[in-house]
Length: 132
Ligand SMILES: [Zn+2]
Image (tube, rainbow, N blue to C red; front, side, top):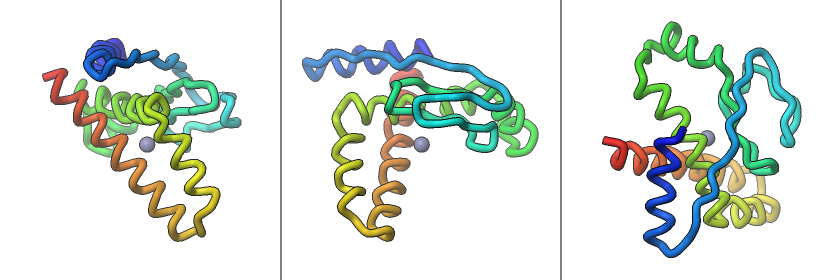
């Protein structure tokens, strides 16, 4: 988490901006967020309403055991993806996308959701590049 802060603080600084890191909430079972009550079934998530990254501890156990992705990088990448959603919020992308989705039909709205996830993956990749 702090490694993502180093990376994004540097990159935002290079753009003449300032990066404000999100808060991290670790939970097990269920958690109450500004985005509503969430169970472990949801997995890790970012809530733009409170700028918190919520990480379910049992997800990381499942990542290692069920999905065959043990190791630090797999866990770090999951965190970096959620941080990517925070970066989207800081860049104003989340707000723009929310307005687009409100006007769009279901098919278009789903397509936008997929793109937002791919961009969060891209931002995680940017972190991975600089973390290396
Ligand atoms: Zn995501």
